[in-house]
Image (tube, rainbow, N blue to C red; front, top):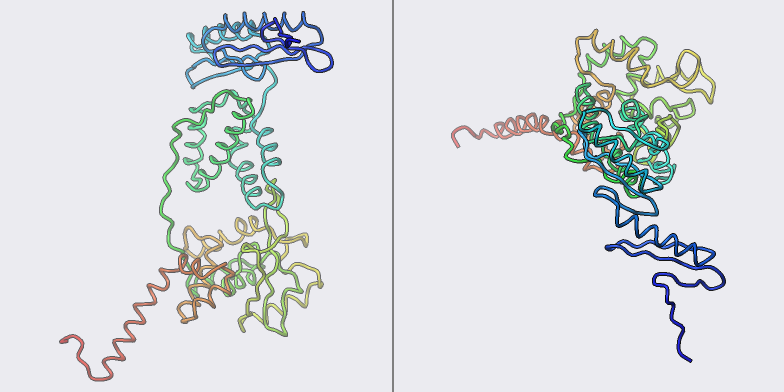
Amino acid sequence: MPKQVNRLAGIKPLSGTGYQARVSHRGFEESQNFRVQSEAQRWQRNLKADLERAPEGITRSKKKWYCSVIGPDGVTSETFETLDDAIQWQNQVRVLVSRGDPLPLSGAPVTLRGFANDWLESRYSDSQARKGTYASQLKRHVFPYLGDTDLRSISALGIQRWVDELSAKGVGAATIKGAAGAVSQILKVALKQGVISKSPWVAIDMPRSVKSAKARAFSVPELLVIAEGCGPYRLLVLVLGYCGLRIGEALALRKHHIDFSAGVIKVDVAWRRSKSGAKYLGLPKNGRSREVPIPLGLRGPLLERCQTIKDDSYLFTGVKGEALNGDHFRKKWFTPAARAAGISNAGVHMLRHTCASMLIRLNSPITTVCAILGHSGVEITLKTYAHFYTEDSFTAMAKLSDHIASYGIDTESA
């Protein structure tokens, strides 16, 4: 018995009940299922006719009509259920473009803030440090400028203005590039999901990265003057400057972290940033705990401090007894104390560099410096503090010259 041939091109019966209609047009294909054959034929006929009459700039994808118009700020696009709605919008926008008027948007807005938060949740797990980094960058540098903007109305010009404004406000090039990288990824996902038809990330000029300045350190007299200027937080400054702790590590210290019998500070926790930019207690930066020997000059002040607080209390606290906020300490105490001492552009992290510089000048092995600072490897210590070793090399060579001279060798006439 000959095989039955379906005489209706592009329509085939489904197993069970119903029909599937398919339309092919210049490389485009779309199919849809129907209960009765007449509905499948009507849909097929109408879609073919729409595809034939669709003007340039309007395309069909994922069962929707996409319309794009080139405006003064780049390409503006919209999505529609029917071709007639798309044509009407296209004509309206072309008139507005000719007048230089703002372009309209239809449908519910898709704000960058809402889309970015969904992107963070789906792309990164809570345990990933990058999630917290992106969340902080978005909260501080993206949302205040672009957060409430509809993704479909973001233009290359708008992105460039945002980048330029951040740069004008003194935001570092690396920070801007990090925030811009998050925005670029968000736009790529939006394009992939069909929220936008074309990414506005085109020829964006990013600020040039200035070569990182050498790590700066305070002299011991400067350190002591700043410590005195920080009043109730004098001990915090000395712990940071003499022990090389990161500010997040120092502010996470509790009484039980100070082991006087072993003579060490146990660094096994630090303040970190969550996905939303909120602070939380986690592991130190390299993910490993360490023990930092307590300098003799700090044992007395630390013991005195520990005798005045409970076992579970933080070592450094705010006015209400909670853990001291690092930003508050910097703005209220550290920066004013440094300025009063005549030191410009001083940062809290310079206290950590001060510890490193003193250890290096005392000829401490690089492995020792690395262990005290909590670096993941000596290569980081070398990269960060290479200039301190270079400066110290002149002193070493002077000592070598004196040593050679003690043998009566005239090196100048050699």
